[in-house]
Image 1 (cartoon, rainbow, N blue to C red):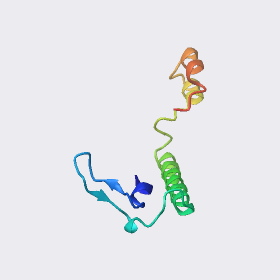
Image 2 (cartoon, rainbow, N blue to C red):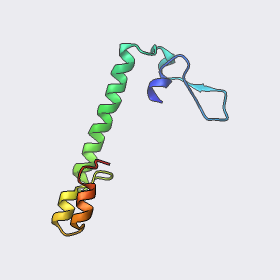
Image 3 (cartoon, rainbow, N blue to C red):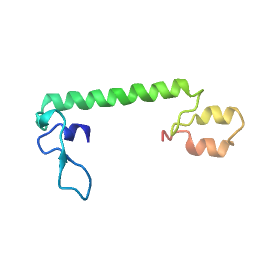
Image 4 (spheres, one colour):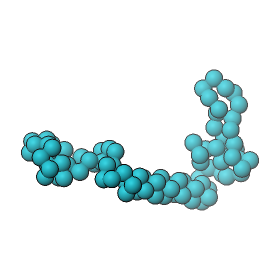
Length: 89
């Protein structure tokens, strides 16, 4: 939505609205290198934020479970560990 808000067409304010939201006057063209640079920046910002949450949350990382660690602590059994050991989400 952030990258679409930078384009000429913009982003609708809501499903009921005919008005559109633009950032920086809609000067970024779709498929331009600047759009890709902004998308990479958003992904990197999300990765840094995710890493920051992981390191500050005392080992709890939502949606990314440490199945080997849970098995080692005896929280899950061998069957559950084998079923989930290759799942990343």
